[in-house]
Length: 181
Ligand code: NI
Image (tube, rainbow, N blue to C red; front, side, top):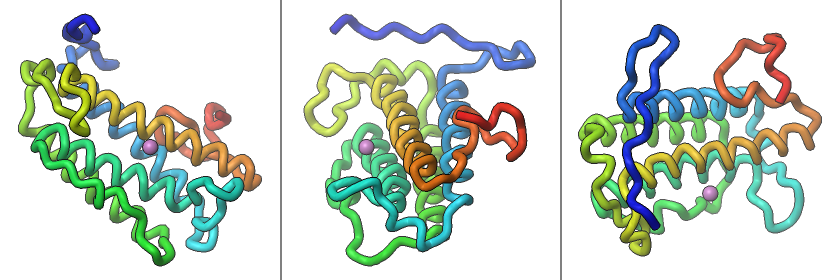
């Protein structure tokens, strides 16, 4: 695999140049806001819905987003990998509990990111013990991809339940013409 070079530096809507970490935070913030909008549509009773045997329940999708984020950040920034953090509890899940878990995980992520700067993104990150050639950059953008993947599954579940998921890329108001996904 060729070495990964720095990403092109993006400009925001005002023309200000963003650092790559700012760009990453922007993606994380927008997608998490959409994930939380999905959660806002649900009752505790909805969380046990799943499309069939052997699939995550709706609640487990949200829980997995929070748990995987904690696992990835601690593994790649602190070398602290503990698969127990990804274990699902035996009891039922509640919407308020999931919202708190997502917010707490994100707050730990923001604190971890604040310890980095763009020059450190090319450092190797021994993610999950078997990705020696990967960089911090690779695994942090993987975190974005992971939330995109699971919030898309949540959107499909919502459709199957007869609900309309929120717009995928940013937390728009309901009723905005772009909310169709
Ligand atoms: Ni996953």
